[in-house]
Image 1 (cartoon, helix red, strand yellow):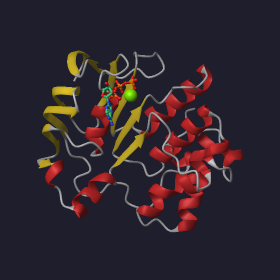
Image 2 (cartoon, rainbow, N blue to C red):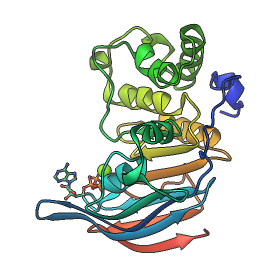
Image 3 (tube, rainbow, N blue to C red):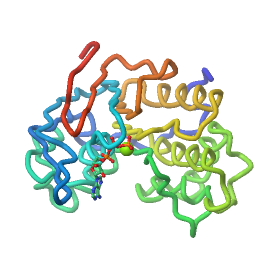
Image 4 (tube, helix red, strand yellow):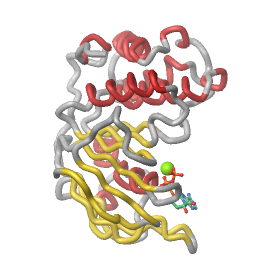
Length: 242
Ligand SMILES: Nc1ncnc2c1ncn2[C@@H]1O[C@H](COP(=O)(O)OP(=O)(O)OP(=O)(O)O)[C@@H](O)[C@H]1O
Ligand SMILES: [Mg+2]
């Protein structure tokens, strides 16, 4: 896949970045506890706008919890997640909404709405941002074509295979061209060819934007320059360039 963003239907005259969308993303001594479980322990990381970061670590090492903290979906027990200078925990509802619209997330376990068709699921991030329905439909169709789901527009997510659901989740995360793309285990359940094509797509749509991808181990298809490794909720070490 080498086509540009326009050919996958995600380019548009609509502004794709909102105020502050190019902000630095950082966490300072972020700890998350679930009862007795310490999912994250004093994690401090700064991600510059446009950085491409891979997060690795064994099962239960805290990758998903960390991505959710970055996305503003998980509140730290202590420590701060910042978006630019702002502590995400102190944002107003409107500021939080604006911040959310700069983020796209591929969830590890699919978060599609079974009551909606695949097309409507993928259109959601656009209609929520006020994109007119016709344009949203066109852009969502383009992205679905790009992930190989052109025949699944009108299906319900419950009737898709695991890999198809994953691809629909990728389509939904990228359709609004978020300035920060968070991809949690985006290749789980995919065959090698589909993995490669999804990896290319993630790299293509995140070019010049921020990409944070969580995988159990680094993979050749997604060669990101910065690698963070988690173990038992701690940021263990870091390899590569900042
Ligand atoms: N909502 C929750 N309630 C209770 N415990 C949780 C919750 N979410 C995560 N945990 C626990 O926090 C720890 C870290 O989980 P997390 O999902 O972040 O790990 P992970 O690195 O993403 O694992 P995997 O590679 O399996 O996806 C685990 O011990 C998990 O059981
Ligand atoms: Mg996980």
